[in-house]
Length: 296
Length: 253
Image 1 (cartoon, rainbow over the protein chains, first blue to last red):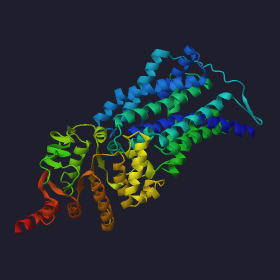
Image 2: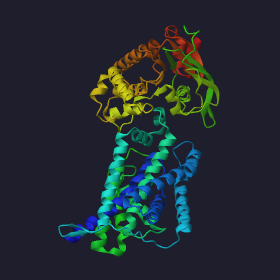
Image 3: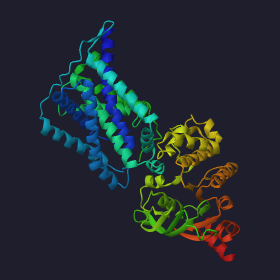
């Protein structure tokens, strides 16, 4: 029984990481109508930037996390302004019809990976953070890094929720995600709101990377696997839905952990997709998705 | 027209524009005096909605000028036009259904960050439409068509604009509800607002407005004081559209 609980806890903390990346993908999708395939690389960049802040400034872990989120968020804004926005404009506005954005996301993913390769090299680097003693819960012993992931992710998700529901800018962001023309008529600076959406999404991706860093190595290709899992999570929960991204992330994490623990660890990457296929067969719009919200 | 001397609140001159390469507006000229209601009438596909988009900044006119409260606004970004005090009231169906009534209203006050102004705006909106106060915590998707239209008008008032552009406030509503909405619009104008009413419901619009414009094929086809237009058969014919039968009927008149 304690083995089962162990697996669930590991799955939940892993799921939180997927959820953070999936929230970013969903935010960008609802805000820009872009399926952002380069989000795994944002996660990877976040981890590297966190590592640099950690090694150079010797700051405590929470500050490393916040620092990496800020820097990666700003990098995201620059990427959106300089590259994506031109393509959006080519499509005649802020909504993309066609494949340009999908292909552009793939291209950005390859470019960012190779830029990171040039700067950081191909070696997997350790992220030496000490979190102190493992936490004992009854007869389950939990490494403190997992508790960190869960707590930090919950704090970030609650902050995002409060931002979106309680602040003027958050309300504007939701309006832009809902309908850009009407948001304009409300007096909202739509291009600015889109930058905010992209920056927040990238900051959350970076947070996921920094949180995973200490339990994994940091390396250039770390984003690829996570991106695919986060996509599975977003699809399971319902693409574009933020609560759906969280639910999907947790389900994918737990499924993967239980599958690896009871069936076979060498096939651990398959379980998330089996889950995704089953969910899509039963509920094509995802668990919390709304079918009517079809984007152009 | 009683307004020859004072500068109008809104003056559009020879506005030409469209989407992509398709020209829809072929030189629209209209003016709305301060504190009055003007009506822009026309059926589907006459350029009415395109003109509205040009006025609110959603499309840039290709040529011509739009002057609001003494300043050129043509080609300006829509949010900056709202900041100057010209607000488009959307149709009821364009309220955000997944937000509460109060969130929708606060969205209308986006350009007014100051807490006191926002609270005052809510009071004013609830004053015109008490039903919205009862429903303020409900999701907007649960409102009736008439309540949605009230919400959109109230949302327009939230930024304390100088002038509002109303996009077919009578669309898809029962006659009794239309009457309620138009009474409220009349009260809002009575309290000092300048309005341009874009409508298909010619009779109701002309009963409320001081001056009317009929748009057809992207130009102003007929204009005049509302009281005269309301009995004018040509207005009715022109509004009914350009079918051959109508044209024949008009010849016969």
